[in-house]
Image 1: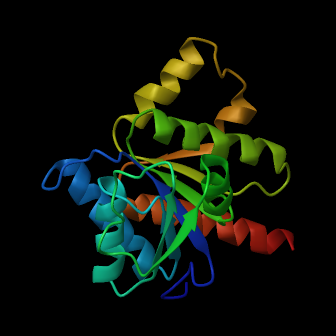
Image 2: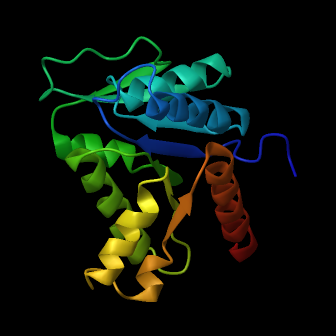
Length: 188
């Protein structure tokens, strides 16, 4: 396997904007950014604080490139200091459009915005049929969340559930992305 198996891939990472520095979630987000950068991925995120800043910090500490996609609607927020570059958008839909021009997605724990991004990525995977972009939920909250969706019969189709993978740590998340990339390469 290549030392940088995700070279040439862009991965968008979603997570809580209120994640506090020094928490376990912060450490996980930093480690995620670092693991993605070490694997050669270019990383994109929402560009502000919380998980976005932590992921950006991890990417930059590992020598990688991270693009923050910011939004006019968040006038009270400042882009985080760890971004390599920034794309500023006028609307939420435009921002999501930029973030979804990625080859894969990692979803950390978060709130309404993060859930919106998860479900949008999941819907993209449904529409992409034979070669869906990978959606990886990272962290210990996701197995219960995904099980609840299934037990409540909100998402009970095994084919739909298979489009989202759960990883307990950043290395597993990167492994899932690498496997998905290999699958796409074999299909070509």
